[in-house]
Image 1 (cartoon, rainbow, N blue to C red):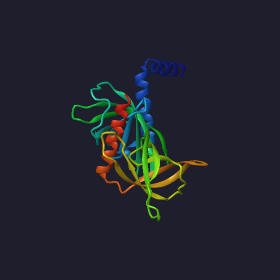
Image 2 (image 1 turned 90 degrees about the horizontal axis):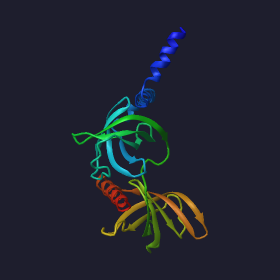
Image 3 (image 1 turned 180 degrees about the vertical axis):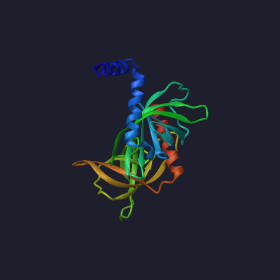
Amino acid sequence: MGGIRIFGFLQGFGKSAKQKRAEESQRRAKEEDLELYSGMQVEVTSEDGRMFLTATLLDLRGDRAQLEPRSEGNLLAGTEEPVPVTLRGYSSLEGKAVVLEGTIRPNPNGLWEAEHLVLVKRGNDRAFFRVDTNIDAGVTPMGSFSSKEEPCKVLNISVGGIFVSSKLRHNVGDKFILQVKLLPELEPSLMFCQVLRILERRADYFEYGCQFLRLNSADEERILQIIFDLQRKRR
């Protein structure tokens, strides 16, 4: 009996670190039933925190899947080796944000191969990647007697919403029209927004987390492209 245990130990000892990681990710994927996330839209970020790809997660089996790109942006063009990444999406079945980790590599057919996927987090936090900004903008309250534009700053932006600072007080649920020039070469954009939370409150300074309203798929693609462009300008 002791000989069997020793043999098992030696057998495991002879495995490479890569083999052990692969077996562990397969075991965890089986336990977590990742296949229910097949078809989910995901944002893919690299180890340094940059989003370089948005895609649809396809054919998820065990700890492997394929990624079908949804946007033209790609900060890892020309990469051939597997790249460690984080995949962030939203599961409509569970009504929760989902975070996966794994590696991806390009496929000649235009897709990306995702491997060694493991579930890192599942919860009610925000599901979108955000890029920091510091852009002057203006907001016009909706449904109020005043149509005067108020100055503000856009502190970060994602496909789902923005984070703004202002000297004026607003309440959760308030709606406004944001006018902002996100890139110098672009015309100003008008976006309908709603305050979801007040993140900081001082005497004459407020920070608001806001969601976009009335976005269609073309609007989302445009915002994604802007996010890619903002990241490229910082490289």
